[in-house]
Figure 1: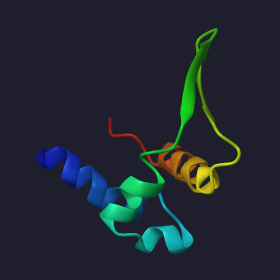
Figure 2 (figure 1 turned 30 degrees about the vertical axis):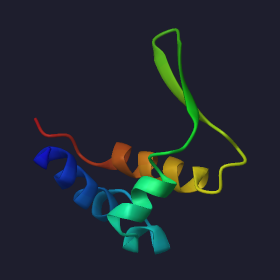
Figure 3 (figure 1 turned 180 degrees about the vertical axis):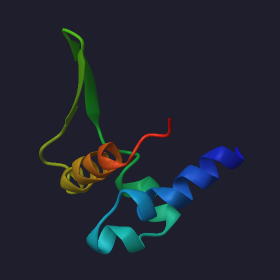
Figure 4 (figure 1 turned 180 degrees about the horizontal axis):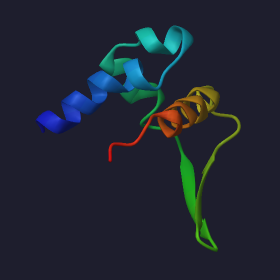
Length: 74
């Protein structure tokens, strides 16, 4: 349970930009974690398709891109 709280606390710091970086954990759960999407596997790639009408889909894709830019530990 503590790992989930730590991830929730570090998500805005590491991945979010703009006003979304200041969101409280309750708003993160409401806006980001309730988004409807499909995880599609094609070839050897996984693609996350989000609903275009969802108001926070741009914030979600920006956060995922930000997480992909982080250096990996080796």
